[in-house]
Image 1 (cartoon, one colour):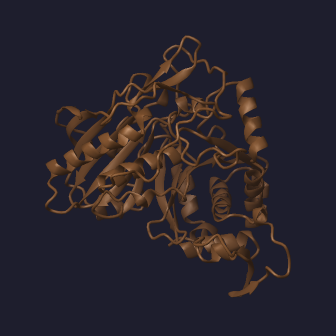
Image 2: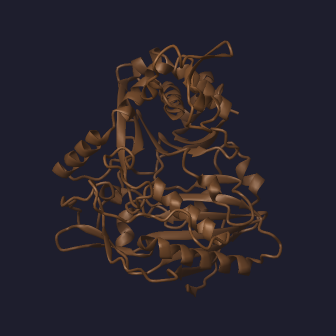
Image 3: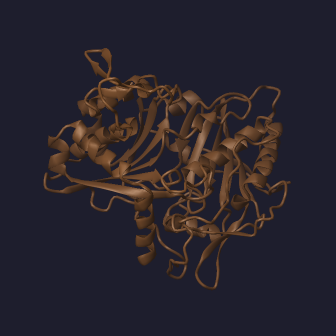
Length: 475
């Protein structure tokens, strides 16, 4: 079980009660896991920082008992995720591996009982206190050679608990991150057998002999993180998302989206005109891939409105970059719970004048066509291209006209019930944020709702807040 060394000190809003190392309950037989073509570029990215604000635990669960329960649950969870308890190592040929040596992860117990849930959720801009709820701030993933690959910080608030999870981005993408986080909650809630075991197979198209070379001491971050920024969470109800999708598809949808994607069987095509739904399934053959998705519709609106708020020249190029999960795009498909990064970045480029003068559908269709075209052959071409020129992922907004969309409203963030209630909110730390960085979370109320975390330069945020084309969809 965990070994602990306690020390009490204060950051700007959190007093650290103790720090300890949590080891896996059982040692793993896995020796090493080689980083892939999808993992290696993330070594210059900062650790992922995502967390959940939970309600106050029941009175019978004292702080001491709670911390012991969470440590024990984390220890059990690490048995199923041994890679996170390891360290990075580079062999003599320059290949980077996860050494699954059971070194453990960092566990931090903090206290900020002067903070209350409503007080930190109510402000228009995201409260700066959330930055103090995570470990390894401003830490690049390359440092996993000497730092733990994961950390959990549990911060007691006046009326709740914040569980902040920090994981090395060269080891996990969002899919793997949330599977780990969900499993941690599942074990804490009392599960004897986990429901979603990670797959550690490395016999994939992403496994490559290519070597990514680093300067002495490792890479630097590709963005400064020093410019003034504002950060807000914009909430889009399920109805607003549907309205956006209707607009992007000229009123033609499948009923799987009319009813919040509750069913995938017996789907049919419909058109919505003046609120009246008409069945089209008997009139023509529907190509489901031709439909612009809810997420693509939302991204298109963000692209238009942020570009307008930036007041850029019409002749300047603007880029909307989104990450896609490649697991189901490959043939044969990767396991859905493949552990590691299995993502590629899709940049869509257009002139500012076109983005602003054309309608929502035009922008959404550009994004849609790029995503729809990202098939098995495209994924493999991306791998070959990287192998011909190994390089780090260029995270940042280098030309002042870029937007980078991360995370996904499909991630099961609100499944993190540790045994005393669903999360009240999902928040992230300071990591990997710059002007134009967006992250999409599912809304707590479900039904297709989305919470969009938006990071922008102050002047751009002010412009977005007065953009009625964007603001009309908010609730």
